[in-house]
Structure formats: structure tokens, C-alpha cells
Image (cartoon, rainbow over all chains, first blue to last red; front, side, top):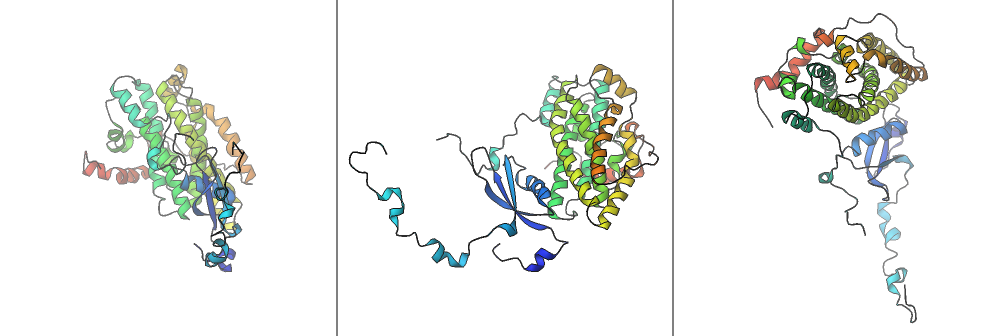
Length: 105
Length: 283
């Protein structure tokens, strides 16, 4: 999934593009990534997503996004990207003690 | 917080809503709550056979579609059609003490009441789309009106079916537009597919004694009354695709009275062989 698509994949006009599918399972929830599929354009991607990912009543709304349009973080730079917050407990509200005199927080 | 578990619903939390299932109809028929008249049963048999034959045709596309996604789309449409067929045939069988399986697997060719377009070979993808285009616009207009049938069971089956057929309409229209506006090759094939299937349009809109009798009671819809809307709506899509409505003579119809082309015999042989080899077999 993480391998980058070579230029030949995007210039091959015989192949359908790859789309990422996000499904919202009910009102009030966020769209969640459900998977991906191939489609010639956005309208057909939505329809294919409906057939592939909502046939068991899973959704009330679908988003499709061209896979190319998603910029993803590099899994190899996990350290510099995601480990910095470790040890920085003061970024969490629970780090702080309640000041005297504050009744409702 | 909400007491209802949210998100990540598994397949065990399916809520089919009030959708009418063939099993519900079978129960109503068995307990005498629903009993079709001979005429209504004949009519249900026609609609059921249309769906059954089309489902069998479409099922052939699975693993043969241009892309995996399209295999699934056509497979879904086939299953929808099979679902409608099961409901109609179960109900029809109530008049003759027969089950849906008796009717699907143990009738002979001349006993089938489907119109000729449903048994037309799949051809290439464009021909299948042309058949879908005609059939789904016809079925949509039919089921839309049938939801107001004086026969409560027919009305309930139609209410479920019309939503599904609405999607089939959209699917076929999207493809007509894309094939017509795609490459020179895809456009040629789309034109060819429509030309191949259009002669079978006329039969769908022919009234006969049965539909006239049933229309008088409000149970059925006169097929001819659907034609104007069919022409208008398919015409809009064809115009957008810059395609002509094919002209030329209509093919002889006779499917409603059991007269079929040689295509149906082969289709039935394949569809019925297992049930006939092993009568009563189940999963």
C-alpha cells in the first residue's frame, strides 16, 4: 500500500485510477477509511464504492478521493514525526492539578 | 453516552428495515393471509420470470467484467433481480400450490412468461449495458406505478423493487454516457448494442387481455401506459450521449404467452440442471 505509484501507472490510459473510499456509518460520526477501488472517474468511483462497501447497510454517506491526491506521512520517519510528544506530559490536561478555589472544571 | 453501540457495526447488526422478504410472502401464502387470484398469479409470473431470466444472464458476467468493480456491480444487480423474482414467483405459486423453486426449476420453456429482451445473450459489455438501459427504465416506470396496486402484495414487492431498480437505471445511464463519449471503439459498440436490443422494446409495452382485465381492477398496470415516460427519460440520456434512438422493425414478441427464441432453452438448461439432477437438494 505504501509503495509509490510509478509514473507509468498514471499515464496508462487503459487502467482505471485508484480511489480511496471513506464511509460514514451513521449521522454524527466521521467518515472512516473503508478501503480502495478502481474507477474511471469520480461519479463511477462513488457508485463502485456503494456496491463494494455499503452493501450490508454500513453507510449513510460516502467520500471518494483519488489516491494520488492523498499526501501521506513517511512510515520511515516515524521517529522524527511521532515520537517527539513522548515525555511531554504537560501537553495533556491531566498533567495539571486543579487550582484552589476552582469549583467546576 | 448513547447506550447503542456505535461505529464498526458488524454484519450481525444488519437492520433490513421493513423490506419484504420472499419468506414473509411464503408465510402469508401458506397461512392464507395472501392469496393471488388466477389473473394476479399469471401477472406475477410474468414479472418474476423477467427478473429470474435477467438475473441468470447477468450472473454470467461475474469474473468476466472489464474490472473487478464492474463484476460486483453487475452481480449486485443480478441479485436484486433475483430477489424480485423470488418474491413474485413465491406469490404466484400461492395460486397453484407451488413454491418459487417449483416454478423456477421445474417448468419448461413454453411455460415461461418473460419478455424476449430478458433472454437476449449478453454480447459484449456495451450490449449488456444497452439491455440494462432498456430493462431498468421499463421496470422503474412499472414498479413505480405498481406500488399503488390494489393488490397489497404486488404493491409491497414493487415498493421494495423500485428503489433497487432506480439504482440499476443510474448504473446503466452512467455507462451509456461513458461508452458513447469514450473512444471511437466504445462509441461504435454502444451504438451497436442499442441497435441489437432496441427491437425488443416494443414487446415490453404491449397490452393484452390479462393486463387489461387486471388494470380495470387496479391490480396491474397497462404496459402501454408506461411508454411515454420510458421514451422521454431514455430519450434524455440518449440525447445527452449524442446518440440516436434506434429505429427499425420490432422483433416479434410472444414471450408473455410462452413463445421464446432458442436462447431461452440453453439458458434454462444451465439454470435448471442441478435442481433436476438432484431434486430436493439443499445447502
